[in-house]
Image (cartoon, rainbow, N blue to C red; front, side, top):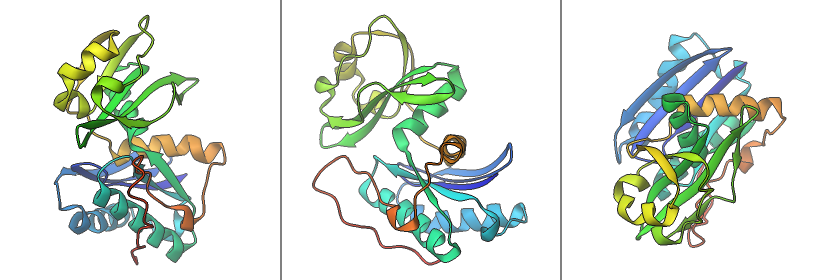
Length: 230
């Protein structure tokens, strides 16, 4: 199985290539540089592994939530490559990717993922691992920190994502649960997304190129991104 993944949803820009069980990746914290970096990252990974686009099984991308421009970049690049090479796409939630990154770092199977959404809000999701797949407790939402739904107080949760850095003092009283570990610098990565995409391929959750669209969560941003030629 060969999966290319890209993510530009946050201040982190990353690309990863999964070939069978091996993952190669490039990752850089580079706000506002994603459009200049992502295509070169993809080209480098394909060249280093002597892999052609036609050999890929799918292209995964961070579909959101996240920054408006970042989501459009990833969706546009994924769509352009998928159209050019007749490949399916796999949209991957950035909040789920944060859950995967936090799990790999801590072993925790219950993650409260929060991304700073600006405008005094957070992108929020509670995920738990069930039979090696992440399941949502509720839904992914964008709300003021005080309005997050209270998670199960009997579970040891791990808080992950920049929302915990920016809004920790406002999230903690509302969460009101066992939270022994916080990872406020945790960001999504394309490497994590390749692993999540494997489950989607195995379950047949593949989409055609035209469905490579961002998930903003906010209703006031819904324009279709321009695809990028590759």
